[in-house]
Image (cartoon, rainbow over all chains, first blue to last red; front, side):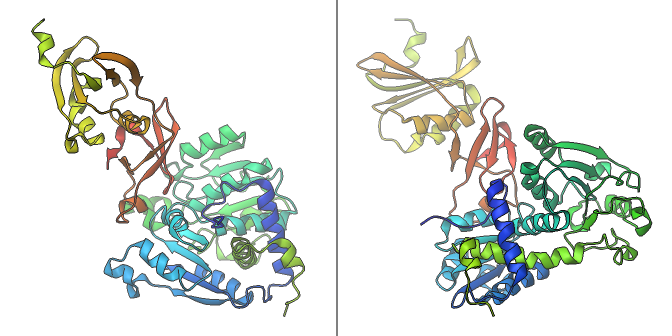
Length: 314
Length: 152
């Protein structure tokens, strides 16, 4: 059987990305459908991630599926030393598809190789988080009307932030210009800059973050400087307050500018930005629901035509 | 016969693994699983070599290695040459070629990689740059240099 798992979208073609975005748009038109009536979706969270889990479970519920799973591996046999393979094989007996978050990198790839049912990677350590990338793409597409020829500014932790790395790779089909705004300690790793050069993606690097730097931005993608990524906490204290977006910085920016953030935010976006019409991070999270509905259906082999022709809308 | 040549006996049929870097002789033994073979094996270590200074040489009687087995050696000793012997004659010379994939041979350097935490699982690397010796873990996707990785 063809493996329909989703481990990364780095390999997806432009056509496949556009196809999934169109499917997400159909779900936004009507998220409540009974397409998955009678199916069981398992959500296995070996590492807690409340918002990702709720988004996936809501997506499954609104499609009419039933959801099983766990949110804390301490209550499962993996705490007794059960291998990932055994857990996956066991759950495959019950569920039609497995949504999995794991703290180890490569766990989703391995699970997709051993499982008889499709796996959706809901994050594997610092490696991949494809559903986040999909909702980022959908949010950009929705707010700009296109993915082509955009100025995308990535701000904050560009060294450890997997969302910015995945977004960068997924955007390669669409002729973007990237601006990397980060402190020296957290700047974009050389391997991703090499990737940009190899793919012909233009990029500029900045260390300053003010209204002048972001004047030409179409998308401002803010990220959290994560405490848990630092081995040296004094270093964290030194850089955490450097890249904060304030409402006053948005005055001279483009009217089509939208501000994205994978959430949760700590203090990198001041609260007075929330009421600015350019703030888009909460709608972005909402878009995650439709993107995940599209991903679940695609992994189960449900085509866009079946979604279009769906007569079971409720 | 020269006394030096007496150090290793001639093979009737089998494989001579030559030009092994001196310190890698026993790594080659374990990569090829020679310790479990029942045929006569001669292992020479720290022999003089014009090319390498000191080298190792291994003669394995009645055993011919597959290309897959030979490619394993690329991880530790790309200088190795193999002479295939039949009826006391060298009938073929083989060099070590870096394969496209390394399965179950080296360990991922990333401690958070699933391959370092899941029992009973093989590692798998894609060789992304043969000349520079760059490997990419199939699972955690971390790129690493071949000279830095450890054998499984």
